[in-house]
Image 1 (tube, one colour):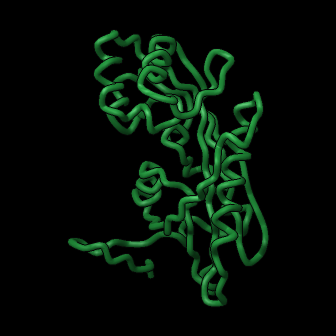
Image 2: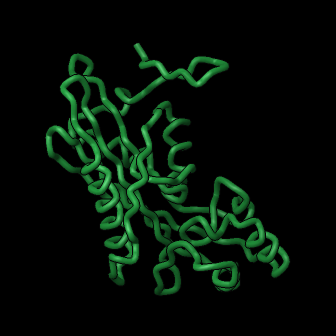
Length: 218
């Protein structure tokens, strides 16, 4: 890839956590929110649901982009759901819903599934997969649940929790890639890039200290 057109990654997600994960790994993505109505996909399989939504998000953003000859554009769609107690849990409907979930989840475990769909615009090729991680929740008190829900954070994320934010203390341990729980698995992204004959190192950038200028790594 070093002699080919430079790589551009477009993240089809409004999630700040996903963007921060990429930035921490040396990747500065462009962000375009897909606007996909997640209620359109109905299935009782968590892996199928998150992958189909990731695919729809990537395809929705794809239609708004125009490929150029001087760069190679990749679009990444992601979606996450929690499989818990035989149910598929996305974002809570409201504070009461988030409270009920935590009352059920505390002291127990669930599986967080994150679907990833990577599309190479010019080549018209696609690579996709689901990463899954088991999450063990702490047996937290009613007061802790009330305080956490009051922050509003659980309302914005699948499963009503985070591990990289205020919800971190309420997760005892995980079995799998922490990035999956955040919503983007970097090891899986590396493998998907390889499936499209790309290297994750070709997406590395560097940020000059004190400002937001992003320069390609030489």
